[in-house]
Image (tube, rainbow, N blue to C red; front, side, top):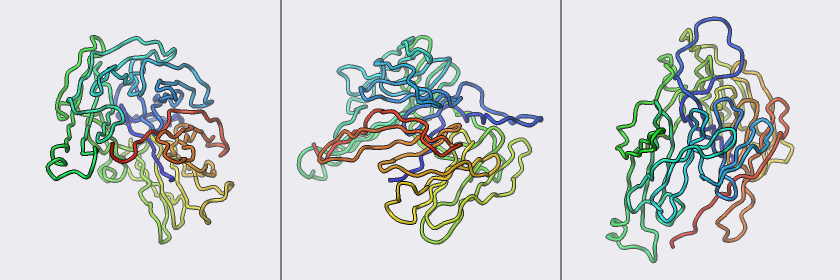
Length: 373
């Protein structure tokens, strides 16, 4: 499977590192930045990455070199960054429906904070379990961490259920947990009690195109897709007839639409903008399937100029590709063998200047369950 997954906005859009010409800056949301990625979390500078490791702890690493910085067994899922701390989800021993949020020093991994227990409804399972699903995301607003969550339940036990059994097992719940980052106090609230997310104001004709889907506060939302200077869209994708992926941009300072730039044409194209707004990644289907190992299928373009940065081949088992700064990290799964339910994964990063592999490292495996319990 070849999927473009460019990450979800956790706190606010990250700034492009390219120099800005003189002139007024567009209004940008205040506060620290972090990006939720297909493989974990990146800080807003694009320098640090955080991912679940093979032992269900957290690894911190340099996104430029892949070098390990520290590991922690205190938590298993990175959530958000604030005040030089990585906030992460930690399981509550003996309670399938509860977690804590811990704060780890961004540079050393030392635990500096732990919240009270966040307890969800009795039927919820925050870990992998038959007949249960659970997801959550986090953002920090004015010294409080807001944990948006969504849980679902269905019949997954024994023989085919009766309609009554299926109805009884069907459950759903959504909400937010407000966590005070000084006291650690927790309050469970309805999803509509979460504060509004800060937004970059888009030009009117960009509001439908220059957006991406982001999951927060227990629901999917449309958030602006921007760099430091531009609102950006690459709207064309699909298979079949010849079509073109085009780069559309709006100047955030002047509020004006800029000339469209055609990036790539073909019959099997998918285009996305990186979370930091600096790169347009385009997947172009290979001439022969499976693609020869050396055939480039990924094309990376600068959103500042529209010029090609590099093109590079895919690796079998790639399940997600994204870009951040001058690296294109991709998640690669090992081949599945028989009834295994734990699939090893690697994170490999391509240098966008050369199109060559910059580094790779192991991350936490993909886990799933077979059928009914």
